[in-house]
Image (tube, rainbow, N blue to C red):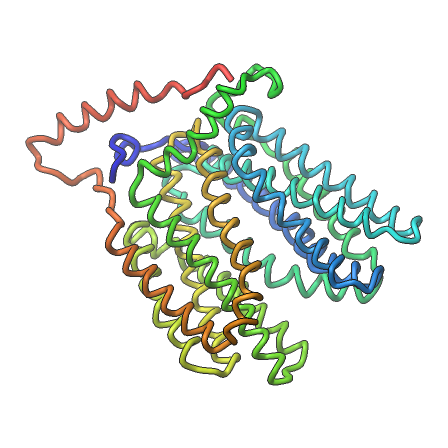
Length: 455
């Protein structure tokens, strides 16, 4: 570990200490509201995202336009994660979540009206996809940073596990629901998106805890100097780079995400060449969400027992034999099972890193750290999806599978060679423990003032 006090000093969460039954009932109620509203919202988002390319093909009969529409909902994440992390740290997180969901309601209603009124509304579809994807980034980053102010520290593992399970359950249900609704009527998925976003708005309005950060900036975003903004942007990456375990783990996840995108594409290509039906391919794609859902349900207990660093280590090691199965077995149905187990391990890693960040990252910079993390990992997803088709076309599926397995060998070796596990609070010689804690508490007190707090 390169950072000192952040790794060892506990970070206070919200929701009280849980000693009072009323306080416990309040934070559990707020967490259920936040989680359920987010789950409904993500279900609508994924349903609309699944219907977008289908609608584009129906309107234009152009795969190019369908590709533009599919990319329109994912590209905002590449450009917004880092700046949104800064806004989430500086301004009202509850209000950011509320406004982003309200905009999604209006956006979906406007799209439904446009689809009914205009003869060629595909340009409107692209614009709506960009807006919906952008609002999802704002909501997701604010939600992840706000959870620690709702949930007590001792419940962090369970909370992150439930949040991760919610995501995978939405993946399992969202895509099929989007396809079914589109077959019933082309505006149906977007009506669902509007309704689920409205449910999220209502759940946010019902929260008792609306103060979801330690301090908020009084300045408007456009009044902040460029120098201050650049300095604040760097804070998220700085906190990641100074923590050796976090930086190496995120680097391994980013590299793995590139490989996973290539793997799923080559498995789909092989399934089509074997003339598997569309329903079979759809079930294959749902394997990832189902496995991730099971992983998220079981992860909290494992993370609490093994600690986040040890959990991440075992999961990264487990990737390698699974990718070797993909490389050695040409049957795509076998390969998709191995890929699904990778998603099971990925859920463990996501929960572990979320719990670890909540423990070691100060609250005033948590949004920027989460934004930087999402930028690294989701950017890798986009890169892998873009490169996969070219690599498979040039090399073929089997050679590509072998190369991906070899790349995962390098990922595992590099992770084990570079990672440094953080010391536990009770480690170290007894004679030095008091001095060490005193030094850490002094440093933590000096770091309690947010960098760039006058933004």
